[in-house]
Length: 151
Image (tube, rainbow, N blue to C red; front, side, top):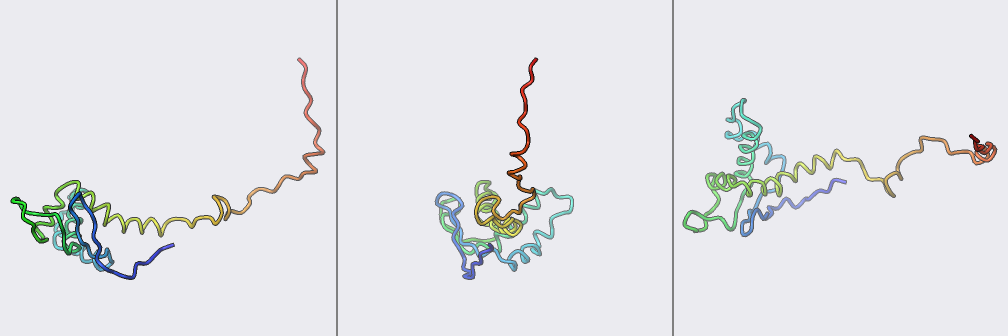
């Protein structure tokens, strides 16, 4: 069953020890805005899938990140999110992976959820119909027992 979260409130996501980001909900409007982001549209047609994924993830993060904790400049001073800082954060491989897993994959899981079969109510075959006729007990009893061959 598809469950709807009607609160539409931003949520905090941990991306690394001591680093967390507050993100807008992953809505249709956010995905449409990301797809039409100039940085995404500027990706050349001959770009690899990896280059496209990185451009899309950075654009999505620029739209989604509202606040963060545990991110600072080269001197260790906390900084606010900015497009350049968000891009730099996603250039860190473990952060990129965590962002994809914690945020982007939620939309992909929804895709899988809507394509899945409904579970059977009681066990793996409870909802299945019979395909073979039941064996007749009288027919099995009337059949002669096999004889042993002597060699």
